[in-house]
Image (cartoon, rainbow, N blue to C red; front, side, top):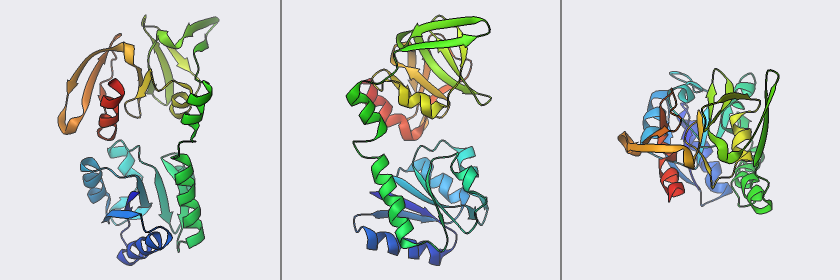
Length: 242
């Protein structure tokens, strides 16, 4: 497993690396970064399996990293403060460790990461028992809309609401989070290209390459918002297409 440590106290970063190696010698720390600016630059050019992220860095609160770029990588937050826990779990957090970090709590966080990324995870289990949602009922005013997953072009987040856009252009508010939606859809047919969009493969009308290996997508019906596959998902997206 590869990871990075984002921590502006160098002694704390070194000690965390020491504990990780003692817990599992197979863990590779690819980089130790000490600022938001440095982290954004590194993550825009590299990939890792797991991020250890201090909340308070010398140039600000590390949550702002998520405002500057798309991050799908699991995060274990490290901090001396309780008050950031709620905000942390709105992001990609799988654990929130208070300093000084207890080694047993660190072990528990790593075990949780392993469980979530094992073949027995929620998505793999859903595939095995065929529990992906095929039919949808959505109320809009006094009207109840019934349709299948094949009629969906894409899901979109806008102004904190999730919308279903059907192939005929109809747009409906869907009462769920994007994470919940993603778990309910067949990964053979749907792909989450970034934090804002989940698209159906049959809705793709055109694709063009962008910088850093990204892919720009046009769907039918066409989205008013630009659709670009995020850097960290581009490789998986191309594999999904094939």
